[in-house]
Image (cartoon, rainbow, N blue to C red; front, side, top):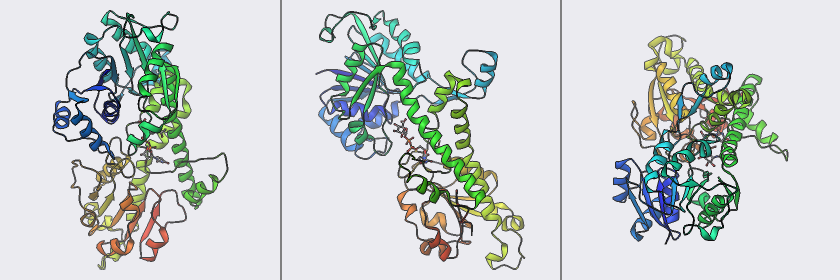
Length: 473
Ligand code: SAJ
């Protein structure tokens, strides 16, 4: 049985290692985080993903998956570690390019470099090293290969004469490929199996070896290319989505000024056979789409004005939502409370801290518990900076905040305004007849366009919907 050493037991590495372990490989999962390794060895899974816990437990029980903090010799090494953003300057080129880059964010490759360095002592002739982490173009060839070659082994190159039958036996070479993941959080196990895959080898033999490996569980088609193209393909996919969402967000801002409903307009535009506009929202979160476009910008800052503009449009959405909430509450008159303090805005009479805002949803998107780069958190911070008293609710999230995370009824009780930030199924099903009587004032800001405005207006709510210039009532 072939042995795989999989480095990084996070959102991608852990499901991937588990897949291989349940498809005929002996897998050693490695992570530098002792707590993660300890809890996995106790049968606890730190990642919430449908079906994952059962699969991991089965893999551990079968003995085909082991988890540890130290790499081991193996036939295949897979690196699936995080590549977050670091702030600040970088890159080479003209003075102007450098000034531009200083305004941009760039990839922090320290985890990839550390993982690659840690496997060097274990590399043997014939090994395949696969980089799964999303990386800026040219990382595999320009950064990974020189580290791996410190092992004293030569990396297989295009023009060399060898046949796949030799591999692992007579060869003295090392094989390297980039196999970017494409799975959607919330559907990881399904998409790992059924999505098509793009594999970029540093040469044809490396690409074919990686294809044979992934074909053990991938049922989608596997396409082969070179490593740099594969890096760029992955980044293009997420950048395409980011730019599309930015366009939807820009349309939303225009619709608010025109007094039309962008949700209706997008639905109608998408009836065109060649148009598919995504949805506007409070911003783009998660560890991929808000991050990956910068990896392209960092290698070509002067060639990417569109990508950069899209990033800024999306990054400005949380501030827009904060303005919406401010506006909704400015309409909240003291008289609404049944007090005799005239018709001044509530926040001006008794100070913003007396204004209670219930924020529904902290996760970066619907029906997941992941808060990484979540724009909901930026909205919460913006509202806190204005001095509002905040009540937070997200039944999917398990994390600690400066404010208590409350059950829905507690979060809503006595609130002056509801702000819907994540379209979890339980929030999309909210009924104004249930929520309204619990509140002090009936104000609603829906940033996901997932509630039915007529129902809320009929129950006496004053509502604002992001991108809906018709809704403000
Ligand atoms: N969002 C919108 N409007 C939309 C769709 C999404 O505002 O119409 C927002 C979401 O609320 C969220 C963010 O964008 O905050 C990203 O969500 P997402 O569902 O678009 O994507 P991710 O980050 O969960 O997963 C993406 C996927 N990439 C593509 O669809 C091209 C996934 O396939 C990748 O594997 C993943 O990034 C990754 O790891 O790179």
